[in-house]
Amino acid sequence: MGCVSCTGAVLDGNVLTLVRREASPEAVDGSGISPDRFLGKSAAEIARLPARLGGREVTLGDLFAIEGFHPEQIVVRGDVRSLTDLGRGMTRGEVTVLGDVGPRVGAEMRGGEIVVQGAAGDALGARMRGGRILVEGGAGDFCGTAAGEPGQTGGTIVVRGPLGKEAGARMRGGMLVALGSTGERTGADMEAGTIFVAGRTGPEPGLGMHGGTIVVFGDAEPPATFDYACTYQPVFPGDYLRELRRWGLAEEDGGVEGAFRRYLGDLDSVGKGEILVRDQS
Amino acid sequence: MLINGVEIEDTFAEAFGMWGSRLIITGANERWARTAAEAATGLATSIIGCGCEAGVNRLADDEETPDGRPGVAALFFTVSRSSMEAQLLTRVGQAVMTCTSSACYDGLEAEERLKIGGKLRYFGDGFQGSKKLGGRRLWRVPVMDGEFVVEETFGVAKGIGGGNFFIMAEDYPTALAAAEAAVDAIGDVPGVILPFPGGIVRSGSKTSSRYKGQHVSSNTPYCPTIRTVIGDTALRKGENAVLEIVLDGFSEEGMSRAMGVGIRAACIPGVTRITAGNYGGTLGQFQFPLHQLLKA
Image (cartoon, rainbow over all chains, first blue to last red; front, side):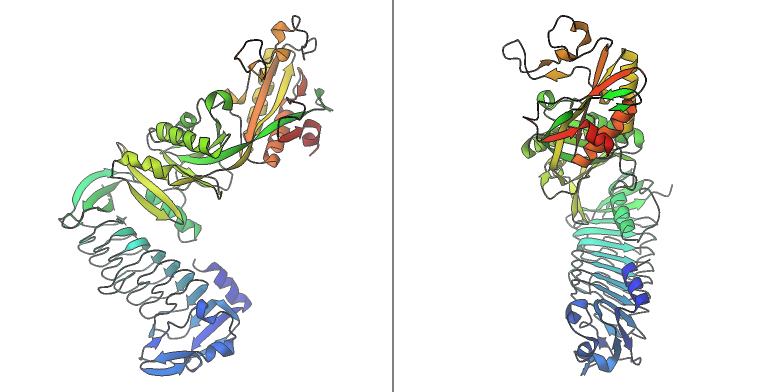
């Protein structure tokens, strides 16, 4: 599962590896760790690039032991729970984190792939425009966005573990797949795009939703400002499943079976959003 | 050349450049996927009378449908890109969208695109919605059994129309059995269709007529019932039935392969000869020499 090409590269030692020298409670700004920024540079040159630890200016080499020579395949190891903004704005290549990582991973990302083999912090993929993020663990609040900010406009985020509150809030495009459960106000104020939740959503999914789709395979209770329309068998989730399968993120064959209850809302807003909840009866 | 004692004439099939599209049509089950595809490809035997030539083709072995449901491929061939657009709009709109549970996707990776779903969406009367997925846009049109999903654009690419071979036999049952065997064999070749009913043509034509205003007429040299009253019969004594197989496809390689397996399958006892139709190489862009493709 995950970054197949990267895994192969790990085995042959070609990847560029950044190993955190020592854990620190101070935030490490990881926005400079991206294939775009490393392209054309040697490990030694990358080590001399500026970075920030807390409020201090340091070099990446101060924070990480850097080796390898494939700047489009980056592996980050060690205790990086305080690493923020990893891969911010990246457009290409692959970044793999072997463990847990801090907030805002993949923020404003436009292309390429980030794989987090542990858990991720808040604002995962905030304002993401393209590319793919896979998190093997869970992630914090505001997945695809940040508090009060616009949401994801493109790309795909897949999180295997639970997600916090307001996942996919203010989303305007792309796909967010929660293979676990999500917190309150999933897809709040959403305008477009598609959110899949394999488990259950927290209270008030889709609150203030203008458009877009939330598909829930587990349980969800849409707000009272959503109208139940019908129970039917939508075809399009099968198209998404196939796309996920093509990326190695889904294993089952066939389409999406079963009927879904369709709710339209939020009627306190434009009301062109939809929540599809798999019918368990 | 003899195959199983059947003479293969040293001639060639002459074929023409066309434009082709490939649609993947899915349904709730195999029955309804095929029903939609057969309706969409209906009355599409000859470009002259039908505006396009079309047929149902199975998916490649490693190919899955976009929505994971049962599906088939439907291939369409026309003389121009603009006529393809007109044909697809009519056929997808009238025969696929109307068929219960159907969805319709592009099945041809081609640079040139035709906006089909992007126009059919207006049937949704403002309640249609779309999803953008992997660079494709899918339209969801509300219909009475749920939603009709149709891709925004379909690829169109150069293709080949009018590949053919004739099966001459001692009697009709033998000709039919040979043609059926050929159809079954060609059915396994992806990217090639046989647009005529059941894949077989009984009313082959020639491009002339004794009647004013009639541009084509029965291929009289191959009609056994009038063999003795025309001066230019192509039939030998003992040849009492002829059936033709006509093929369209996307590549010369696929067409050659299909013709090869079809001809080999048709060489059964009682078949006297297999030949092909051409215009002396003066009209068609493509030639398929029978001996050459059977040696490959």
